[in-house]
Length: 379
Image (cartoon, rainbow, N blue to C red; front, side):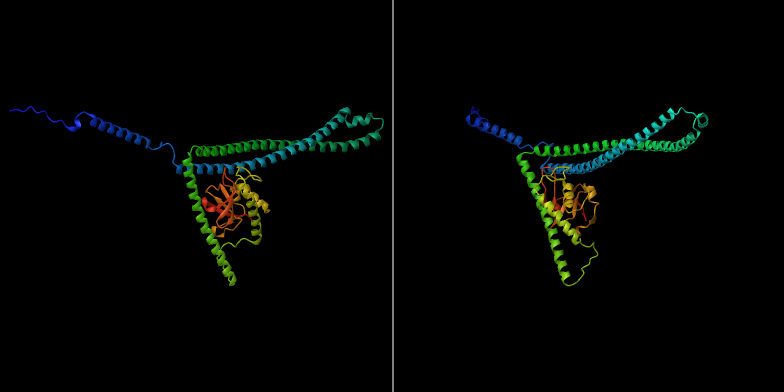
């Protein structure tokens, strides 16, 4: 006999308050998961990482310093060209005065000849009432003719020289204009690189700036550790030198002799000057007394010691004599990067005084914080 019992419904399919609660909870959980996934989405791939930002800023500052050294060179060239143009213009003015004087002399002779009437000597002798006086006058006229020829030759010479000097002056002014254009171009390049670096830094959040500062601190600590190694080697070498000196040994290693006492005295003066500039701002193209760029500081420091060195890093590196790392002494210049765009004054112990970049000040820093190109002794 068939049963009419109702089938028992499955608990999950039975509508009611408990089922509704279960569904609602599941839905909320789903929404929450989606929301968390959305909030945890990675930053835009177009935005560089902090490490990349630091690398970009360092590159832009390096490029700005390279442009600064080109600017310094263009500025020097402009100054030389302006001085040459001014000297040539003065020469042209003096030659023009001499030429005008010669022109006036020629004019006086021409006027005198016109007033004489142009008769030849024989006719004048026959017509004169005083033949003896005429002969005396003829002798005087011969001498005047020589003076006229000399005056004419002087005029021609001065005219040619004045023309040549005027052409040189025009060419010099043209070169001056080109030098000024290069100067303005490099000045613009410096400003553009600095502005780009600052724009990158301004785009960072406070948290990103803190991370960037941490990276910079780590870099400085690593550079300081390497500088400490240099200081330790210098100390060991000095003690070894004192020891061999006390035993009477020459201690010759075949290397370049150390700097003379005269150099050491000048180096001490240069270092003392540089120390007095600590804290002054870096300004591209500046040579003091209130601000400096890197090569402006080293030039001023050695200038205080009575040694005139070139303006730019490119020229300073070839001034004096090159030395090796093992021969490095206080007062020597340390050059950085393969394109020789930065320089500092070595003070010993792996440290230097330098003007780093825009936004910074003259400071003491390890020479190991940048890739070293080479070293040079200035006197």
